[in-house]
Each structure stands twice: as C-alpha cells, then as structure tokens.
Length: 177
Image 1 (cartoon, rainbow, N blue to C red):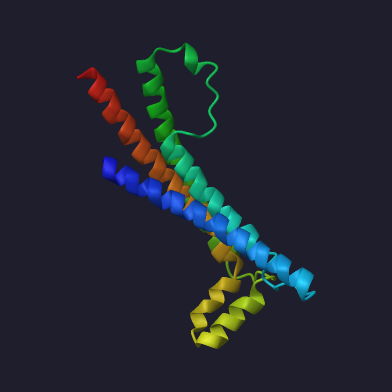
Image 2 (cartoon, rainbow, N blue to C red):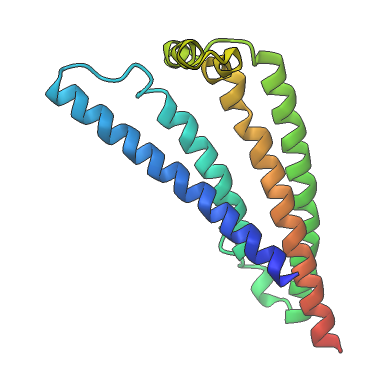
C-alpha cells in the first residue's frame, strides 16, 4: 500500500508541477513576444487558464493524499486521537463520494458542451491538425477538452480519498494491535 501511495503522490506532484511549469513558460514566451515583436501568441491568453485548472486539480489530490489540505480543527482538537482518526476516515469516504460525483458531473458537463470551440485555441488546434495531418488534433480547440479537468479532478480526488482512507484504516488497526 505504501508503494501505491508513493506512486500516486509522485504522479499528482508531477501533474501539478508540470502544469505550473507550462503556465509559467507560456506566459513568459507570450510576454516576451508581446514586448519584443508587439504581437502575442494567439493561444497564449486562454491556454494558461485551462492548464491552471488542471494544475489545481492535481494539487488538490496531492494535498489530500498528504493530509495538507485546509481543515478546520477547532472542534476535532477536543476529540480523543482514536475518535478523531475514525472521524477523518469517515471524511475520507465522504470525500471519495464527492470525487465520484464531481467526476460524473464534470463528464456530463464536458460532453454536453464539448463541441464548442475555444476561441483562443481554435487556430492552434486547426494548425496542429493541418500540420500533422491528424484530424483528431482538432480536439485541442474544443472547450470540452479543457472542461474535462473537472471530471479528471473529481477522479483524482476520489483516488486520493480512497488511498488516504486505506492508509488511515491501516494505521488505526496497527495502533489497536
């Protein structure tokens, strides 16, 4: 179980870090172009917004798995350690259900509105499809691709909550033994 949790932590950290690095690189290049050439990249305004959403979703899962998320502990601090750990395990189950519901609703939302063009990315998606000859790359220019971050974020939260739940249960059983 420790290996699975460590792999998930690394994957979530990679996703969050890569998203942040790409956002920085795109904004940096776009700024340089704007101030040196006088023209920004057509997709340089919209793509960082979508990448930031993906980064937040990966970061959310990482924070949950590391137990470093925001938590109001005013009341839970008064509970005994065993009751508190059981309460946190119950919260993990609720978070798992929330993640599944978020993934489902994010999927429904992206499918319903997925064919709309992302105005700032339309030229980039069409250029990719024309340059490579792969018509499927037009998906880059569709809003659904980027709205799917909600569904992926829900799935990541569900995975993180499930892993954290099993980690807590193992710790509770180890203390009782």
